[in-house]
Every structure is written in structure tokens, then in C-alpha cells.
Image (cartoon, rainbow, N blue to C red; front, side, top):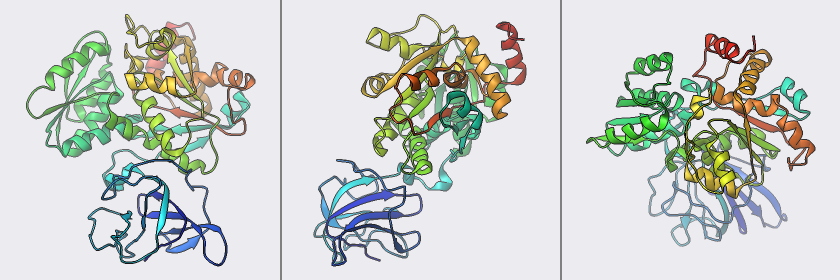
Length: 442
């Protein structure tokens, strides 16, 4: 099976194959088309047609593929592997340099979009593709379409499994046998879950503020649990020490490029769901910054860097907002918010850079607004989420989305607002009732 075209070519890697976009310069005239290796037929471009990237890199090819490179594209029909004199033992398609191929015409690559999930098969991934659900009630509240990315239904209840699951899989291939993670909840659960699936040992260091329900979940996954310090930073210091043991490796809850790469898969799912539509804004809660860094990485890949990011934090856990106010990374004196899963006193450097390089709107809310948002969301969507997620929901329920729309801060008024429901593991109905009593909301 050979695809060949004179002119320009776009590539996009999928989980089960490769589609090649090209410009038809045959005698029939210039027509855009692509060859779809799923159906083995020529079709018009779908809403998934990628934007043009000036430069990119494909880990699935024998060498980097960059804009402007010429070559011949060959796909083996039976195995979806490159067909060339020098066989490339890599899965699902690729491109060989000019001169290596005995068949096909010359093409010029202008863009390559690669799904990094291809590095491991769909069956090996620990995360699931989560639904993108329209919320009529939240849409009515804001006066604009609101779509919910339901990361709270991931294994162990949060988006963390994307990045940390990918990290554990990657490092396990390097021979590490024990993973040491510092976490007050979701990151530790993700690391324990991944290690349990991999058959490897996990040590989770948690601060004293961690609830016993989380501790029991960690132990139920076979992890060794160590309690240290008042806040996450204290637990993190001990985790670094424990990770120095032979065969052990440290797992950051948020600060590692491999983790950001895993988190970036969320954006690719959004792109596949929305097609040619582009969000008017992305709403997320920010703790240490791992989700933000991953989203910006994914937004770069799909050409969404002009989409505003609404970064929500609670007062008392607002390390990103404090850094932006100061113009440099700062450390909070203490974590005083009930949103313990946002409890990093210092935002990671990459997240701070992302905030300054993108159209990011930093907003803080108080704990009372968070609890009100959690309760309203439970009534509206029948889902109970934790305070960290409540910070993102407060963007809707406290009127911030409506205000930003009136101020003209949402550049694409016809696009949907995508709200990332980041997690719901660190909450129970009894805890919600306790919070309501604490803030006089009964």
C-alpha cells in the first residue's frame, strides 16, 4: 500500500494506524484529501485535520521528521509498518528519508502530529479516554456552552493517572523496582495504582493532614505508607531521601517532563472530540502546576496556544497566583486552604513559564465559594468532587466565566468553555457536611 503525492503532506499518528494528508496535484486538479489506513480508502479531510506546525519531532520514526523535509511515504498494508530497504522496527507507519525508498513519489512534509500514546499500546495505558459532557445547567448559568471533561472517572478518581501512570511505565523499563511518591492524595493513589499494575513496590509519603480513607486506599493497593510533616513540602523532602536507596526512584506529583507528556493526552482527546471547533477557554484548578504544564504542551501540539486558560486556585493554596503577582516564583508561608490536593507551597518552574507564555487568567476563590460550588455541582450533575476540583467549578458558580465573557476576555465567543473536572477521590458525603458546618452553610 503506497501513498504518494507531489506537494505538501500532513501526518497524524493514531492509536491503530496513520492517516496522511496531502495536496493532490494530479491532472484532476488541486484537491485536499488523505489516505485513511483504517478504511483503506481515499476520503475528504475530516474535522480532525491537523493545523500546520512549522517544526515537530516524531519518536516513532527512525530519525526526527521536520518541516521542509522531503521523502517518500510507504505503508505496509498488512502490518501498517514502513516498507523500505532498511526496515524500521517501529509500530504503525513512519517516513523514510529521500533515497531510501524504492517506490512512491517525492513529497515535502509541512507538519507531523504524533500521538505519544503510541509509545505504548492502548491496552498498556493506565488511564482511560474520559467523556466530554455538555452541561445544560452550567451553560445556562454562564450564558455560554460549557463542556465538562470528566477526569473524576479515571482509575483512582483523578487526572493524575495520565502523567504518573506514564511516568511509572517509562521508569519501570529502566530497571527501577521501587517508586517513592510524596502526595496528600491523588498523585499517591495514581502511583500506587500504577505500581500495583506493574507488580512493583511503592512507598507513598503523605503529610499529617491526609485523611485515613486515603491512607487505607493506598495500603489496599499494596503501597507502604509513611506519614511525615504538616504539609506536602515536608513529606516531599523525606520522599527525596527515601528515593536514594538502590533500585528506587522519586515520583514527583507534578514536576517532571514525562508527567507533563502524560497529562498532555487530555488535550489530544479534546481535539479529537471537538474537531475543527476551538474552545473559548479552558478552566482548570492549579496546585503544583503539573496539569497546567501538560495542557500547554498539548495545546502547543494541536495549535491552541491562543485559547485562554483560566487557572483557578483557593486562597491559602495560591502558589501560582502569588508568583504571578510577585513576578517571580515564591513560596507560601503555609497551606491554609481546605483544598489540600492543591497544597504545594511553591509552583513548579515550568508551570510559571507556561503562565507567562500563554493567555492565562489567574483567579483565586475562598474556601466558602469552593464548598458552595461542590454542593451545587452535586445537585446539578449528580457528581461529588473534592475541594481542589471545586476551585475550578467556582469559575462558573461564582460568576467569573460570565464576567470574563462580558469583558471580552474570551476570544472565541462561539466556542465552548471546557471545564476540567480534575478529580473526586479525596471527598465523601460526610466530609462535605463537615465543611458546610465549618462555614455555616447548613
